[in-house]
Length: 523
Image (cartoon, rainbow, N blue to C red; front, side):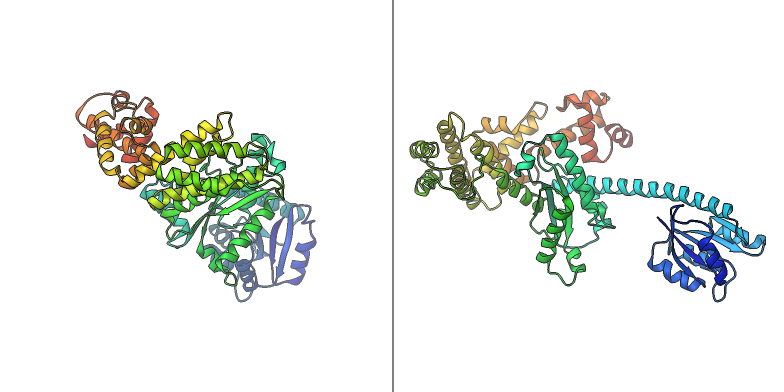
C-alpha cells in the first residue's frame, strides 16, 4: 500500500477527500489527516509518505511553502498534489516549479482524483524499479571490490571504494553463513537445489541489514563448491546496540541468521582484524574452520561411541618419528596405526578423534617452526595429501609416503634454507618467464617442498609465486610495447601468455589500462 497524507485547514474538505473513493481498492492507505502544513512537515520528517495532497492557502505555512521546504531540504521523496479554490496561474507555475505532480481545483471530482492516483502508481513503480536496480548495482560493485580485498589481491582503488561505505572504522570480521551440508537432509541434495537455497539465504540475510544490504555478498567463492553468503561486520555495528557487548551482538546475529534462513545453516565468525585491508586474515580463519569441520573419515552418526579409542601412545610415537624425520619408525608406526583403525574394534567416531589429534599435532609442528606460516595452507596440505587418502586400499603405503614427505617438509623448515633457494628460483623466473613455469616444477628442480616454497615465497616477497611471475611478464611486455611494433597478441605470446584476454586482464590489473592504450600514451 502507498501511504497518503491529506492536508487542509477545512475539516469538511479533509473528510470529503477521505471518503470520495475506496483508497484501499486503489492501492493506497491514508496515513494521516492534518489541518496545517507544520503538522504535515513533522509527519514527513518521521514517516515515509508516498503522496501528499495539500491545500495551498493555509495559516502559518502555505502548501507551496511546505513543498518548497521539503524539496529544498530533501526531507521526503513523496509526490505532491496541490489543491486550490482559485484558478491562478501563479499558483500553478510555482507548484510545477517545485516538481508537484499536479494542481487541482476544488471541488475535486472522483475521476480526476483517480487519474492522479493512477499516475502516482505508475511513477512510483518506475521509481521503485530504478531504485531497486541502483541498489542491486551498488551491491554488486561493492561486492566485486570487497571480494578482491577478502582474497588479499586488491589495489588501492578497491580499498578506497569500500571505505566510502564503511568509513574509517576499525575492528572488522568476515562472517560466513552457509548451508550445513553435514545435515542429513542436505547430504543427498543436488547442486542445483543447494544453489537455490543459497540464493534464498542471501535474500533473507539482506533483510537483516536494512540500509546496509551491501554488507552481504552472494557466493564470495572463497571456497570451492561452496554455497555460502559472506557478511562484513565492523565493531561500529555492535556499538550502535549500546546495551550489548560485542560477543553478545555476534551471538545474537548468529541466531538471527539461523532463524531467518529457515534451513540448516552454519554461521562462522572470523577473527578480528583492525583494518578492512586485513580482512583476508579473517577470511582465512573461517576457511580453516570449515576445513576442520567438514573433514570426515566416515558416516559418524553415533552419539555415544562404543568402540575403544585409537591408541594415543601409538599416534604420539608416529608424531615423534615425523618430527625427527625417522623414516624407519614412520613406516613401522604407520603400519600399526592402519591395522588398528581397520581392525573393527574402533567405531568411526573414535577413528575421527584419533585422526583429528594427528592432524592438529602435525599442524602445530609446522607453525611451531615458523609462526609466519599460513596455518590454512598447511592444513590444506595435510588434508589433501594425508587425510583424504588414508582410507584407500593402499592406506598404509599412502600414509607412510605422505608422512615421509611431511617429515622432509619440517626438516626444511628447521634448516631455514629458503632465502638462498628463493634467489635461485627468482633468477630462473626472470630468465625463463616465457616458458610454462609452475611452482611444482621449480620445487622439483631445486629439491624443495612445493608447499613450503610457496609459503616462503609469499613471506619473502609479499605476494604469491603466480602474481610475481605475472609481474615479470607484464614488465617484459611493457618493454616490447615501448620499443617494438609487434602486435598485442604477438607480445602476449612472447612473454608467456597463451590466452590474449587473460594477458589483457593482467595488464590492466598492474598498469591500470589496456596494452593498446598504454602504447598510445607512452608514444
